[in-house]
Image (cartoon, rainbow, N blue to C red; front, side, top):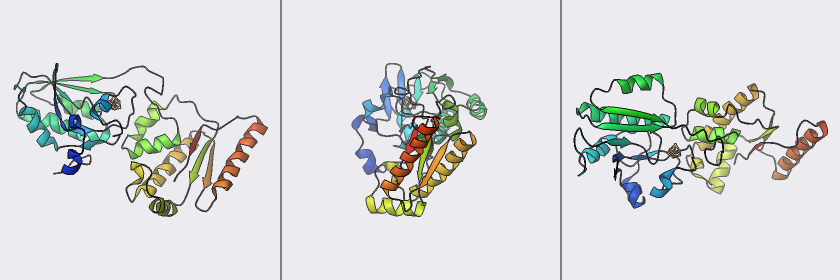
Length: 284
Ligand code: SF4
């Protein structure tokens, strides 16, 4: 069995909160299928906390798509061609790059069964022309695709990441970099972005010695992957005219780093070009 997102082991599934294990949910408006759970988009109003999944930012599968569809059509309230259905509408976005394959797998599976049920899909992510063509090829299901647009500009509610670190972290979570650039297009540019860099081999050794502090640091290759993304993002923001101060921390003491940043800020104050810096990321 292969899945585009990691699939949980039976032990991990048993450890989930009870409601997160119920992948088919009866709602007044129909049956909702949610065997992929986890979302990096961080909307403050997300309801996944009510399923005990607030910290789950990486989409993961509780079941394979085939098993999930079997559970759906085997549900006691499922009526072929009648029961309204919803897909991935409580704990992930159906058009996140790594979730999309599952969305289409479920749509295809139901459609090939000749089912004419109504299927509702809601997204706030990007839907491409190719996606539309694929959805339009559905022969039996009656599909409705809704797009969420709130217009909310308060980043505490819908965080639009503006920092280099956020751009990297969200890429590690599988968010399409072009989407990140688009939603950050109007973000305020910091006076100075300080990048604390280091040789990835050095960082990897430090992580082994210290242990990971977050889930993104757990894979053995995390230091190299993150370093690679930082290079790309740094190049891109440099090309976009950002002022970057990169400090190689491979052999630098914390006191040295603090001194270098303080010095740079003093230079800013002296020259009158700015009073602070907007981005700071400590690499390890
Ligand atoms: S896009 Fe949907 S699932 Fe993702 S954080 Fe926002 S509300 Fe939650």
